[in-house]
Length: 118
Image (tube, rainbow, N blue to C red):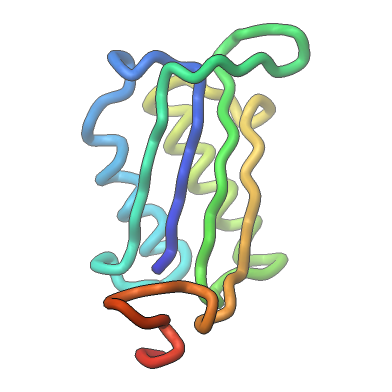
């Protein structure tokens, strides 16, 4: 159920397909969640201006049922931002990442919610 969505102004053609799989591993390992539940989406080529410039930048959100908090968020932020910087060149000071600790009854799955599974 962890879901990472990243919007960036880096063109799609400059984002390797392997980045999504690498971020699935980063999220699963960082949050201690099963890889089979992790979803990652990267939307490249967005029209984003940060601080008056269109230099590479990104914004994202990471939702999870549990496994988030002060220390966990710092660890996830560091790991995700490092991977994004290393692969597509978006530096950490041009990347905002929002965290949402969702309640299991507020996340749908298999025609019901995670309330029935967790």
